[in-house]
Image (tube, rainbow, N blue to C red; front, side):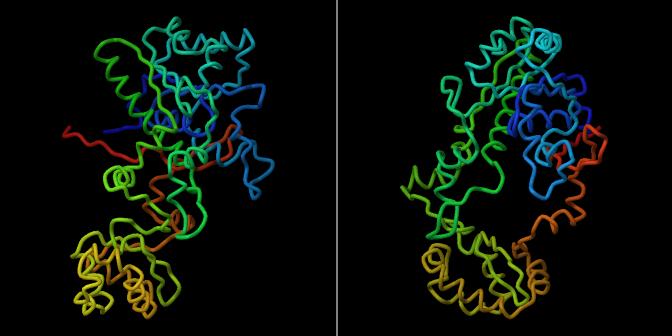
Length: 362
């Protein structure tokens, strides 16, 4: 199925800024929708346009950050407090299918752009809004605050060390996925009934919803997760890092007894399987430090290329820890890139947000 024009008849008005909302707009743009991004003329557009790294070209109009979630959109700079500019927006809303917003509820009402006001213009529209805590709580919300409030920061970082923020705004990304799912349900509902609807997603709820096994460990076993670096609280060795003879970091993910036994075989350590401290997963969790001493001593004697080859041959799940240069040098990763241009016609590259494929028999 050609997904690049799947939503070619869909018109979307994006009133959102920063990351979560715009990434939803880009998702639909990749699938062929017409996405019109409305930016605040009085502030020179989306704030992320100015979020440049010190190493970026100071003469470039927009930051690399801005490009990451604004591919494939038409852009309009409007002052929505100006009557003429506001009319430009409402003219678009008349025949739009979807609005993406991250206005606070009181701000949306003041501007005349809340769900009720837009419904008076277009009854079948789908109004999708992202907020920090919900429509009745106007506190500002930023990703790092949500990581702190939903427990993510408390679990992330080295054992005995300080909390560490995740290196991408994951709360925004997770919330965007929640909003997309809600929008797709709303589109299906409209297809069936002709009715528009309002979709709400919050950073807080999305962060909590994504705690999965860590939440269940607390709710059902009263296990309070501690900072463990990359280690897994339920499986060993999983998330543990080994260093090879040539200094390459390799991360383990041996999730079954069979995989663990094969790892020992690769490293010439099969004899330690007879040690009761390592005879099953529960024992290995208790004696993780002793186990890792054995494994690290073994990998310190082997080159990364040889260790990885042997693991592949034995179907042992391990991976080298790669930096982004290494990631984007990989031919498979190249397939995930979208070529484009900025507003001055200069070439830019971004990563696709659509990472799935749909096949049909036809």
